[in-house]
Image 1 (tube, rainbow, N blue to C red):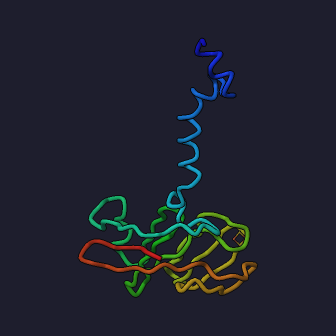
Image 2 (cartoon, rainbow, N blue to C red):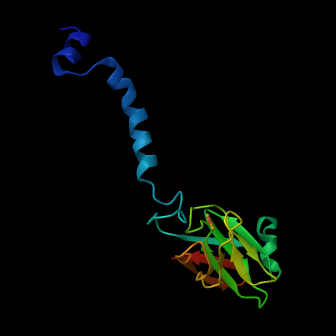
Amino acid sequence: MKRNEFFSAIGISAGMIFMAPVLSSCSKGLTDTTTNPGGGGNTGAVDFTLDLTSPTYAALNSNGGSIVKDNIIVARTSAGVYVALTSICTHQQYNPIAFESAANRFHCPNHGSNFGVDGSVINGPATSALKKYNVQLTGTNLRIYA
Ligand code: FES
């Protein structure tokens, strides 16, 4: 029996054989829940650490500074307290919302919703709070986790 006759007999085409590794890698991407940790409705685990000595996160070394990473906005309030919330607005999922240090709140520029540093709604149109994450500062490492 020739190779193509064998595969034909068991119902596998040559194309399926060559596509197997491609399909396998695609399925890995679909099941990875850590690539969009702050995303709306995403139940993936959130746990990452920011090195505050890195120029990338230099804004967090001053009160009022903020950064966005992986759909999470991390801010240092005017009182010097770190907070981390989803950066995706609960109204119509605008991303990212912004931290307004003068008002000590988070603001969505899309329709004007404002949120407190605890994620609660100050004014709509949003009616649901932003998800808040835990923060832990150890030396110059700021851990963000669920
Ligand atoms: S999307 Fe944020 S207020 Fe509408």
